[in-house]
Amino acid sequence: MGFADGHLIPLVDAGLGNSAYLVDLGDGRALAVDASRDLRTLRAAAGRRGLTVAFAADTHLHADFLSGAVQLAHDDGATVLASAAGHRAFEHTALADGDERDLGGLTLRALATPGHTDEHMSFLLLDGTRELGVFTGGSLIVGSAARTDLLGADRAEELARAQYRSLRRLAELPDATAVWPTHGAGSFCSAPPGAERTTTIAAQKQANALLAAPDEDTFVRELLGSLGSYPAYFARLGEINRRGPAVLDFEPALPALTADQVRNLLGQGARAVDVRPVADFAAGHIPGALSIPLREAFATWLGWLLPDDTPLVLVTGPGQDLAEITWQALKIGYERLAGHLEGGMAAWTAGGGAQERIELVTADRIAGRPVLDIRQAAEHIAGHIPDAVHIELGDLAARSDEAPQRAVVACGHGERAMTAASLLARAGHRDLAVLHGGPADWAKATHRPLEEGA
Image (cartoon, rainbow, N blue to C red):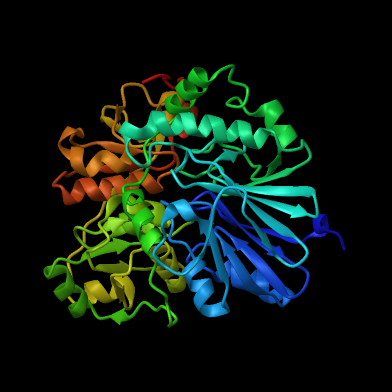
């Protein structure tokens, strides 16, 4: 069996828009690249093949998730491979540009590709002298390059110029070389929409507009002009990954809490996070609770909207996966999980707990009420309900006084809108409603066009 027949196993985290990779080295050992602290999918893939992870490579100090490399070193004895320029404070093999590591038949060559971060490194996988593929992390990605403003707006242009040089270096690889990026569609590290998560050098030469930029200044202007907002927690994780995330030597669990225990915790400053579906939250929830429906994007909004040092009480519905909640929180460094309300809202109300409601409305019932669009700027510009006030969800807590009263809150489908409505309710807004659906549903129901532009 040749390498192309399945030795590379992509492990996609659709919620964060990222891919990790597991490489079967053919001798019972494996290489893991950009593995997350949530190793469940990687463990399952390795287990199906009877693999032990011998090497764990990180392309950069990740801002959007905690690395699983330290855990793999602890559990499997994996050798951690990373850039020497990252000055990581835990045991690892520090690599400089051009350094190679024998993987037992295959070779991994380090290529310094700064831009997304200062110490960013791509890893070229070789079979003898043949370039099989390159793990590009947040350098060359499908259709673009990752953002360069994570170290501060004052360094964004400098790093964009470094990114320009890095992409051109990667473009010099043979056309047939596979490109295996970490960041993909859905990543706030800046990737365009699209289904493809891997590509080739040849395909990117033909289709990547940034590679087609005629000069460095044009590249920088186009890259910086494409950057939107990103979650607040990105500012914290790079340093944690440099120090090394804490090893988990136990199976994380979410303890069961009584209604009285929840009430006491909330009185001491804990926050209630309600992960039930939108309709369930609308029908009745703990006053002040933040709605973040459990789905692939749960970690993103948890990390964007709540501090990591506040104890969290989870309100769940029947059948919701407590392990999924726990791991989504842990992979972005949220470890103060006090537990979940045993028995859900039924137990809360049975114990005398008050509840609040938020109305869900269809598109034909919002006439005469102000609309608050809380989607990302690019989504709003592409098409919104006419006269809608626009405040991104990530900015809403700080700008709640700018939101219209009696607003109908809208997003693409309803999940983010309910999160926004719960933030506004906590800030004192009343008579709120959430649009069931999104602007496209409004256009269909009213037979009116959406408005484009800012």
